Image (cartoon, rainbow, N blue to C red):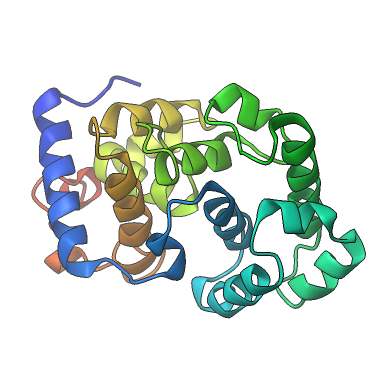
Amino acid sequence: MRPPSRDLVRRFQRRLLAWYAHHRRDLPWRHTRQPYRVLVSEVMLQQTQVDRVIPKYREFLRRYPTIHHLARARVEAVRRLWYPLGYNIRPVRLHAIARETVARYGGRLPDDAAALRRLPGIGRYTAGAVLSFAYGRDAAVLDTNVRRVLGRVFLGPRRLARVRGERAFWDLAEVLVPRGRAYDFNQALMDFGATWCTPRKPKCPRCPMRGFCATVAAF
């Protein structure tokens, strides 16, 4: 897939960041850059709605305020506390991450993508989230919301139908990250997909990307 022009990239970056300045959600994990807390939020948010995660995130951190507390806990207790978020392999993996991080890194999550992805259950998305949200690195993220935004704005329905796999979307996401602004940009992408560029009834008439959105242009 041919990358977008530099001018289009800059326009998208500016408009998304401007949108985020006015529409950002006030979420508890956005009040911290502590890697452990970022990790907890990202694992909880996998396949779970934000409204369900907020109270459980706060409860979890009251019980296990540091990665050392989590590593010392019994995995059965961690699983009980996780209820009723579902997808119950997540607390087991999070507990394993805590134990391995304490054992191998003295309790500090690595700030290197390869090292992060060697930890149990951490894939490319979670590694990018920890790097950008905790360590301020210019790392990309790609979840369901981000994929939908990128597909609609930059590809449109015809080109989107020809894309196979995730590589093209990761390449596009990496091109779009503005230097030094990955934290705000990635949070903005996820908010935009969750609240404006939604699966059903997206807010196209008021969308700041409307003037260059490939999906709008196709209709």
